[in-house]
Length: 223
Image (cartoon, rainbow, N blue to C red; front, side, top):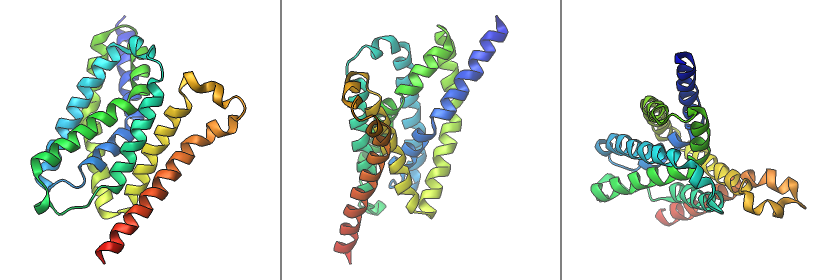
């Protein structure tokens, strides 16, 4: 019994870490334009709120899976988030209302985590084998690792700005996967199975190209 319990704990932590990489990207991108002293608050508070929400989602996973077009709506929302994060203004901290920007960053983190966490929620619910305490414990243990991961990604994006495009592409790719995996519209792919497998790559390329064009226009206006 104890060995099964421990196995479930390790499974939950492993699943959350493996599937949590894209969430770390969201956290880093959402907080990258905040003043230095606000970033840690956004990362810690945003991650904490996101984990709490995800715990409740996991507890209600059976009900959630019955909601028609949930993955489709989530994919569309995540696609918009990836685009918004890519083209957001790089304003100087002096021109930012810190409190408003902080809460916007937190809202983005929580919203994206809910949307992107559907696969995580389903996997965690299965690994927990009916034990709610395991769900809570597994998420809590993984929180500091996700926070450290987002801080590392944030540092890297500051040094290498092109990583912002890679992050946006990753989020858009995830959105494409969600759109392709929506069970209610699988009939659309019956005559175009190759399109279904290509959709994540198409959404990623679309966001990067559109975001790049808009950012180029912004830079041109400033020069």
